[in-house]
Image (cartoon, rainbow, N blue to C red; front, side, top):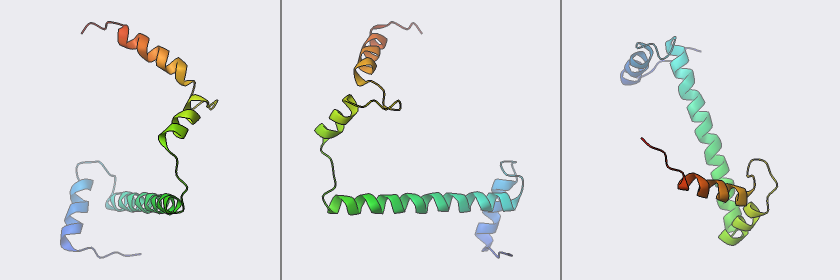
Length: 96
């Protein structure tokens, strides 16, 4: 595919490729396309979440924190242990 960019866009692509951030103009354009794909995926996820809210599928803060406190998931970890660690960390003096 050949792509004819407006002069301003073409100059911009050349300007980001020149300092060495990208190996070629094509690589710079592909990075822009990847960013657009990510943006569109995020928009889709946001639209789904908004639709869920309109359907009444939401959580109040109490149920969210209860789920965090009772979670066995490794990513969340034990909230009480985190609180103890955080308290100990705050009590520790770190000289500059």
